Structure formats: C-alpha cells, structure tokens
Image 1 (cartoon, helix red, strand yellow):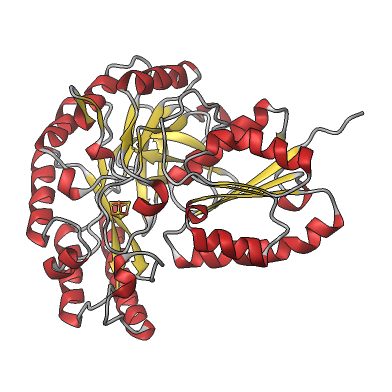
Image 2 (cartoon, rainbow, N blue to C red; image 1 turned 180 degrees about the vertical axis):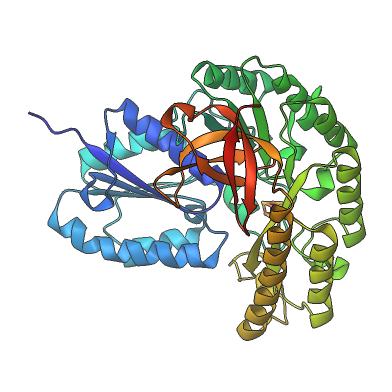
Length: 440
Ligand code: SF4
C-alpha cells in the first residue's frame, strides 16, 4: 500500500505567520498530505521564519544545521519561507551554509508553494523563488485551521510605517487591503463551518482601507451583522490610527471584544520620535483615557521595547511611569536587538547588553505586579468564556478566553469545547485566572 506523505511545519513569530502556516497546511492537505506531529518523521519539513526577533533567527539556523544528518539518512524535502527569506543576505547565507535546503520562497508568493514543491521533487534540484513585493492579493487559498471554533482572517498585508527598529516594511511590503466583500464572504464561510470568533489580522489593521467607503471601523460594523458570529478581535493596531470612530465601534458593536492590544513601545516622547512612531507619550495617554471613558471594562495589552539606542535611564523611567499609569492587563516586553537593514542599526549609542537586561528585569517585575493585581480584582466576577480545549497546565482542566482575552482555567467537559459559557472567577494569578462554570 502506498504510504501517505506527511508534512511538519515549524512557525516562528506572529499571528500573521501562524495564519500563513495554516494556508500552507491547507494547500498540502489538498495535495493529499497529512500532518506529522514529529518533524523527524515527516516527508516535507517547512520552517516559516520571522525576522523581528533575534532569538528566532538563532533558533532557526540552529535547527537547520541539525537537519543535515536527517536529510542524509532519508528522503526529506526541506522548505524555508517567511519574513527572513525576504532579505537577500539571509538567502545568500542559506545557499552557502545550508545547501541541503530544497525550497526557498517568501511572504509574497505563498500561493505558489504547491508548484515550487512539485518542481523540487520532480527536478531534484533546489528551487528559490522569492518575490520582492506583493502583487495582487490572491483570494481563495485553502487553510487548515489550528482551532475549530476560532479563526484568523487576514484583512490587509504589509506596513507603511517604517518604525526605525522594524524590518517588517521591508519583508512584508507596502500596505494592501483586501476587499470588504471578500472578507465578509470568508467570515460567513468560517461561521458556517463552526467558527464563533474571528481575529482580524494585519500589521496595522486600523489603517485598513477596503475601498473609498470602507475603513477599519466600517468593516467592524459590517462583520458585527454576521449571523452566528459571536466575537470579533483584531491584531495589531497602531496608536496613530486609532480613530474616535473605532472607539465608538466598541460601544456600538456587541460582538467586538472589549480588548485592545495597543503597542506603545516606549514611554519617552523623544525615544518615540527616534523610533518614528508618530505619536507622543501624551497622545498615547490621551487615547487610553478616551478608550476607558467609552468602554470602562476594556482590557489593554501592549508591546514595549527596552534599550532602544540612546535610551537614557530617565527615559527608561518614563516607560516605567507610563506602565504604572496605564496599568496594562498584560505586556509583551522585548530587549532591543539590531535588525540588519533598518535605520536604527546605524544609530550611535547602542545600549550595552547588561544595561538592557537590568532595565528589562525591572520592567517585567512591574508589568507582572500590575497583571497580578488586575487579575486578582476579577475574583467573584462572572465572565463569558469561549471554551478552547484542555488546559495546557493540568490534564483535568479546560481553558478558554474571556471577552477581555484573559486566559482562564476551569473544570469542564469535552462537549463544552467551542461553546461560550459563564465562568465565575475564583482566583487571579499573574498570567491567568482560575474559575468554575456557573449556569446563570
Ligand atoms: S507599525 Fe512599525 S513595528 Fe509595526 S510592523 Fe509597521 S514598521 Fe513594524
């Protein structure tokens, strides 16, 4: 009997990459491939890379090196894609140091993957095809979703903002928005397939422009009308594009979850200018004030970079004071690391590693202290939770997300997966809540 071919995908980085991996998996499923839980047993191994963080680069190259031995011992097609492949020096490195890689493609031509794989298999030679920029948006690609009840939906691609530390505008190209009718069609199909919650994805979703009549808030209002859809989230938004109209959408659209991830990056207006973020500390705090005035229960998370070139101790303390003032529910904190090809690479006054680490630890302590305090305040509240499945922490518990995107663990049963249930919070920890299902 002919053995079914298998694949394994390793994904680094953000939700955009996770969703691209779902598309790759969908295309392979259409070709008759099955997913292999073990990378070392798969016929096709794919690495979907990220170039935003330094440690993801290192892990990727390390694993690529280890695969040489496996590649020698059996038939294996090794494919690499994602943001790193949009940089010529990375492709040159792979060609020189990792000649056992079979297929290299980029973020703009994911749809070509089945043909590229076929050429590599038929011609038994390495295939490299990376587009410099995105052409027309390709609609209708399949996806093998990670979850049955929630789905990612790309609404736009690329970024025009050129923050001076970020490589994304160079790897994902300029902003291109999908047409509202294509997004609506996809969301309706997902709902018909059992999806209850969609997360609208883009590097900067609130600069979405589907057509002259549809900006991001219009899209939210439109999706709020989709029957059967219960929750709408989005990721990521830029403070400079957070309009009053979008804040009003939180008030008017009951399906829009009362949660926002609003990256601040730094609390010092001078550093924000150097980062080319296009807002000041005061602008950002004013947005938070407006959001909380309109939606008092909103939960807020952020991204913060520590140790941007030239950041002084006083400027770092401005970040600490902003964090203390906003009281984020959670924050993703990062050590600044040089990204080759970005303006900040050339900035003088790179901060010594030990200083960065010391500041980072102080920031994390503060962020965690606030998260724990905020979560403790949830005790006794009843939250609507979309049940996602087994908790990763204990075998008996189930977990899900509250409307405000807080992770909560509780005793449950398999039939609840995919349903929205009421859970009373019994304990608040730093990174999650504990609770019990109630019938009200
Ligand atoms: S908004 Fe800034 S940080 Fe975000 S993807 Fe664009 S350039 Fe990068």
